[in-house]
Length: 121
Image 1 (cartoon, rainbow, N blue to C red):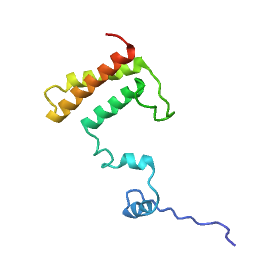
Image 2: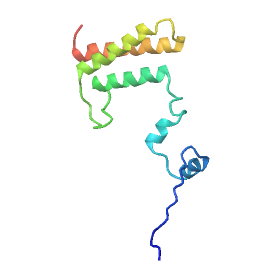
Image 3: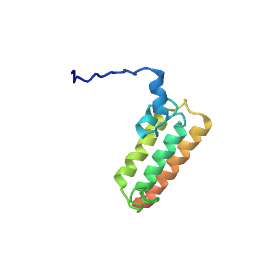
Image 4: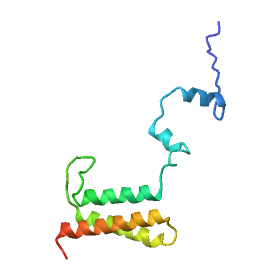
């Protein structure tokens, strides 16, 4: 008697059937990042709003999303405002009127809040 077992290997890499088998499982965050359409909603305005929100958290205007507590970190707030200023300088002449207005208004508001928080004139 022959007790040897026989194995068959099916290599499905690049095969459309492999794609079908993945379709039945739940998408992981890593899978989402690999999709081409994942980042289509990202815009310059979204970047400006994200950085502004970060500065507001560091100025104590908004609670930290992780701890849900307000705290002040002036060095990070100043750094984020500086990043926004750099973006404004580097994108000068390449922004739509709405984007230009948004970054100017955000910078003005953040600078005023920074001055009010530090108590300097």
